[in-house]
Length: 639
Image (cartoon, rainbow, N blue to C red; front, side, top):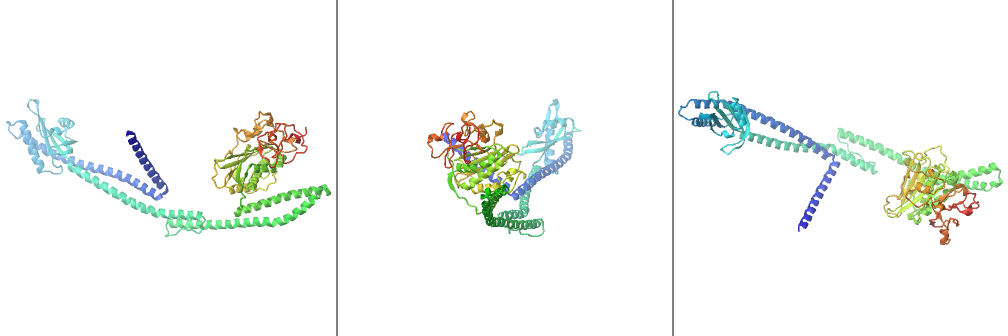
């Protein structure tokens, strides 16, 4: 039962805490979003502080004035009372005792105080004197007189003190007690006790009036402030609403101008700004449409003469053996430049399709490793010319995703060609990983060349942008490859990101969803490479692939494994060495796919990836290796 009661109390407390938290969040949200509320609350807070200070000061001043007036009247009344007491005590016969004479004096003063109550008001009388035998004789409520006040009076000083008393009439509260010695009667002490009930009622009435007046004043200030703030905030809110509509593309929205005050000038300035922006946006849209039409029209119009020139150039190049060396070289250069010109036209057409919003994906569910292999095969001759190695690290298991293979291959091809151009002869890595939980497949291309300066990781995707205009493109690119690549990534609802550091290299990461329509999660691969560089490792060590990839990944060969040593690039008839994955012929026996280091292994375009490593072989000239081979095959190397 106790446990049940405790549980109910805890639930009740949790509900109360949740309610207060909800109310606090709601008030905080309203406070942050409402300028009018902040102005009203700030004004009321400052006004409350000022009114409180003024009330305290005024109350203190009025209280001091009332008490000063009370003290002055009490001093005057004390002079009359002392004279009356002295007359009473000196005018009676000696047969009366001192106690009787004091009582008669008290009655005489009490009667006088009731009949002659003036500015001092009514009072009670207390008398004390030293009688025969040094015994003190008193009359009246002498016990209400503080001992400290009596000490001052006994030292022949007229003194007063504020104290709390309880008189026989039932009054209990503050009072003014004034005492005076007698100059005619030795040892006589005269005390007048003035209750301050009238003054207390006056002060209470004054405080109540000031409190009610302050509350009314605060309410009036709140209403006035809210009205004034509303007049100021309404145009601002209108400007915010119209600016939001303007940002949504409704370029005809304008503010209503009323009067000639500051708000009217704000509205006019806003309308002028909106009109200027609208005109500029319209002009930019027209210029953009004109540029896109020009690009598309020129690209289409140039295809016909280009086709004619291409046919003539191919015809001449086909007969180059019959021409003299100078004409044959000219024909070869003509064909090369025509290839580049044709690639530029194709890129311009692709850009125009993206700009027009008509680019479409041809989605297929396939193993994305095929796209990586195709891209590597395409740029292998560029790696050979640049003298760099291609390090390929692909998953051992198929990685199926819903992508447009042509566009993904083009993105990887552009990234690899760009990395080779800037590699300065150092290895280039392409790495792929997938994460089913994150619905993501990531492909990273890294080089260790010139790198990127701060801020260039955004500019690198601009059209025709070049970090160093004097650098020659080995790939013969047009300057549109990365721009098209980022558009292709966006079509897939993916991301293409760049990182670079001068002297360290650059890294590009393409992240695509495995399943179309599902949210893309975090990338399985890191964009920034580890600190250690591949060039610092011993030549021919496959550990370099791990250093370019992730330090904790064991996808590549162990450097201690003798079968993991790669042959130098010049031993493959100029081919770039591709390490990290080995592909076996699809029609071979299972034993042939996992052959020992001295077994033959070749790549088939239709083959599946395996876990084999390249075997150590002597460098030499290739006897008949295919340009599409990605393996170091002992039969392709002359001893």
